[in-house]
Image (cartoon, rainbow, N blue to C red; front, side, top):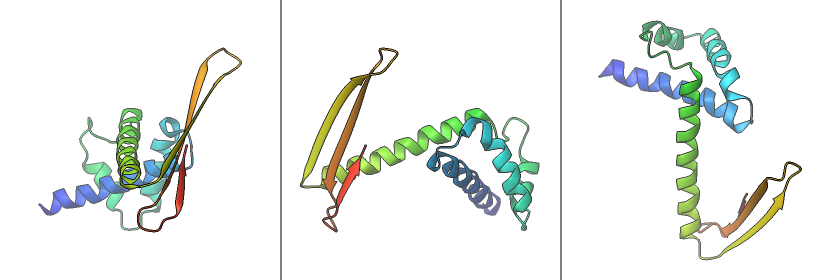
Length: 126
């Protein structure tokens, strides 16, 4: 049980690294593995490098597939949180605009503004 809990903590470290890339809009499929390597080097407790050493060859967690799945999962969690806040709000406004780019692709932009139920502060989501 202790090892399972430690593995969850290390996987949380991997998710934190991936989230850093997502939040700063950095290319996650090319920078994820080098970022994990850097995190492993600067981890003075050596817990992350020990985690990588113990991983089986088919479960290294540093692949582009892993970071893509983390991005999808993170997106789903954030979407659910935002939808919950919008549903709880008494006041919302929705604005939509469509435009065509130079390649003749139609792009739809949606902006949602709602008031935070607790503070009353307006929040805008694009």
